Length: 295
Image 1 (cartoon, rainbow, N blue to C red):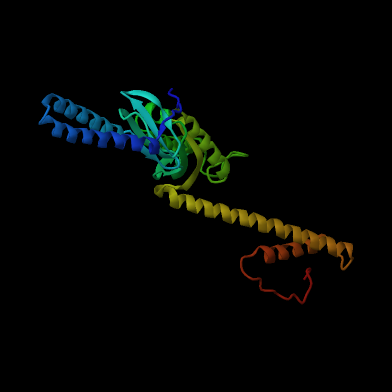
Image 2: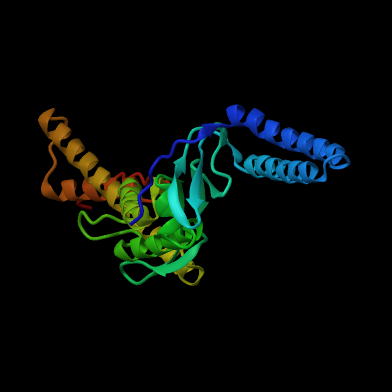
């Protein structure tokens, strides 16, 4: 694996006057050579050649100037050999024969497309994620992978697919983590998986989180009805549990305070009436019994 190494370059503001002096000095030699050629052709030709060489050297030297903004880097190569990376922002100068590849060090966002995958139970789901990343090692990013941006995108989609296949969408077994119920743990698992995959490209993952999670269209209606049925069952269980507790409390209070004495048959009737009132979906219509329970 490649490894980034820093390199020292000259200040562009120091080199710029020198390069301009070479250019204007060469032009002056050209003019002086043309003027001298009438009286001394040999000296004139020599001055012309010297002027061309000096001015050409000055113009070539100007190609070595480059600028860097904050959170940018330049990777320097000399005839295909990696020489180092410049990270300091400002106006710089280096060997003009070096190729200078600019690379951004800023934090970037990648939002994956909505992917249709099967969860741990084989249910088709639609899933998407956002990945926050930045380049840490410029040498690895440029030399160890073909295109680090495409590499991040493809590996992100692959990691999301693998993550979805390892978790159930919801309603897992006892203490089983699910995509819907354990979002924080799922996000950490996705970030860890991406960090391992993108390390070879010199990329650091700052954050990874699911942005879209839903059943696929072909089973969405069926799953919605199942969720509604489960919600109704859960609500009924809570209502029944509360009603039984209230009936139990009422019987206990009546017995402890000796308000009245109820035999088993009257207790059964009272329990039945209270459960109907407390668990019924519509309002109860009272019926006044003018007789007794035994007639």
